[in-house]
Image (cartoon, rainbow, N blue to C red; front, side):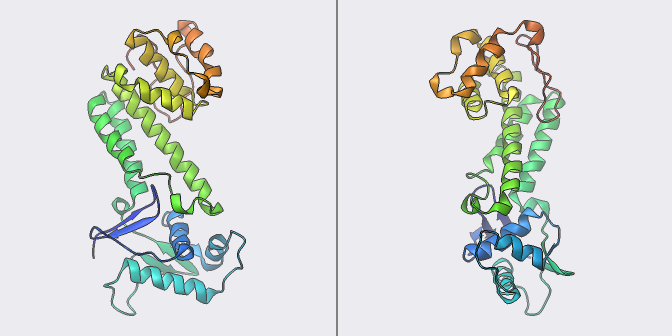
Amino acid sequence: MSDLQLRVLGPLTAYRDGVEVALGGRRQRMVLATLLVARGRMLPEERLRDLVWSDGGRLAGRATLHGYVAGLRRALEPDRPMRSPSRVLLREGPGYAVRVPAEQVDTERFAELVTHGRTLLDGGRPAAAVGVLTDALGLWRGPAYADLAGASFVLPEIARLDAMRTVAAELRLTAMLALGRHPEVLGELQALVLEQPQRERGWELLAVALYRAGGGAAGHRPGRAGGGAARHWPTMVGAPRADRRSQWDPSGERHRPAYDQPL
C-alpha cells in the first residue's frame, strides 16, 4: 500500500507517496472531512448526508453520496483492484468510516507529540520537550480545516484542535522558561496573552518571564491593542507573591510557577 498522508491542520489535503492528491470539489471534500472528524467511527449514510448538506443546500440523494465516496476512493487508492474492498474509506454496516494508521493523519501525530512533550517536561527534560513540541506546532499550516471552516459540522473539531494548539504552545514556552530562555520568549508570550486574554496560563508565564528577565512586570503593560488583555495586567503583576501561583491548570499538567522558583 502506498504511503497516504491526510492533513487537516490547514486546508484539507491528502498526499500519496509525497504527491498531492486531487480530492475533487467542495462537497466531495466535505464527505472526507466529515469522516475524518468522526475519527474512525462509522457514520450512517443518513447522518453523513445530513452533515455534508447541513449548509442549507438541497439534500442530495444516496446516489450522489455514493458517487462522492467512489471519487474519494479512486483518489486515495488508485491502485485498488476493481471490486476489491477499500482499505481507507470503508463500507461498514449502514454507513462509512475512514480508518488509517494514526501516523497517517496529522491531527493524530500532533496529539501524540504534544503528549510526549508534556511527558518529557514533567520528567525534567525541558530541552527535549522544546524539540518535540516545536515539531508538533510545525505540523500546522494554517487554521484547521481552513478551506471548510464555514461548515457547521466541523466547528466543534476546530475548537478542540485550537485548544490543543494553545496548550502545546504553553507547554513549549514553559519548557523554554525552564531552560532560562526568558528573554527569547517574551515576544511570543506577549502575543499569546493578547490573542488569548482569558487564559490565565499565558499571563502566568509572561509574569515569570518578565520577572526573570529583570525588567519588572509592571513596566511591560500591554498597550491599547491588548484590549481585554490589558485589564488583566494589574491583577497579574500586583498580586502578593503568595497568590502568584495560579490554581488554574488548562491542560492537567503540574506546572504552577512562582516568579523566582523553578517551573
